[in-house]
Image (tube, rainbow, N blue to C red; front, side, top):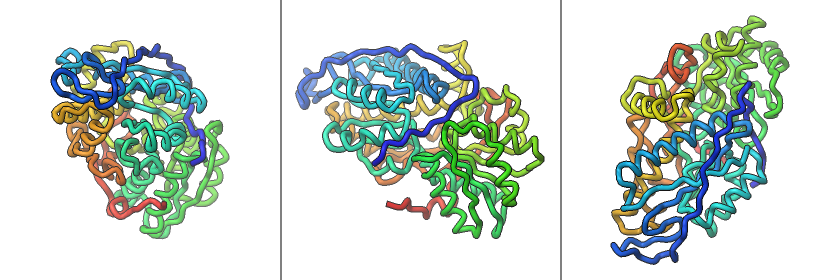
Length: 417
């Protein structure tokens, strides 16, 4: 699989979080402790070390900071409650700055000394080491990426609907609301590479099922001005637009469309939004007719899961804002924790034991809007998508406009091999 770097530049954001680091003294794989629990890499009699490969200084710095701090919050809460299997949890963090060489080097550095990874930002970077993960390392990696190309591994487990499935659900939202209909043209602005092309596969499938025509506009992550794309789509007469790019590109597209009188709904994948954009010139336009899909409720939702997490996060990090990276990071750490608890009950904290334990986890995370099922590595953990709208009045900047739902086309969709 080719290494293709796809990213998003969040406007006016360069956020840095100093990562903690540490190496666990690994016992011989399969050796047992005094209680008869088998241990291996990343596990000692007193500690379980998990890795986090993140971006806190590159194009996804905002996401990386939120994800990492949420996972550190989970570690603190878990350790305060006594840890797992009579062991404290430690998070070894490396910032790769969304650089491919740094990402692969950081994985190589941490892999021998951690049980697995609670995050790995960047689907092309995960793909670059996936053969190593599947072939020899065999430790769980929970990526902060949703490419269908990562589905199918027993060890690399995507949490949520993949970009293609998410896009199908977003187009169904437009069809269900009668914003588009059979015979219409829809535009799709997408990043070249893994993320955008996976989302495009979803829009092509949804269009075929609904009798739509897709007008495609491929862009690079370095393309920040969407004037040309808006002009082309307006000339093509599209009735709606899908954007599978970064927050900055989405804001430019929506802002230019509003300024030129191109009034059509725009829907975006979960990576195409950051609440900080509401304070920019595009803020008003984003709140008018722009919608985002994701596999959880937003952090500002009043449901018990998001509200409790929002309060805990705000208390721990009072100077930092809320965004959906908080839920994504906390959920991933919690999934790993669930697998650790089950592995402990089976007295097997080796990588193989935790891998097997994760395969028994189902109906996870329902308090955040969608239950996730990890029993089948060949399928995403869910095919449902929550559709949200930017809202400056809500903490985290998103409010739900359609509850979790999987379109019939999303249920029937099978990614091309």
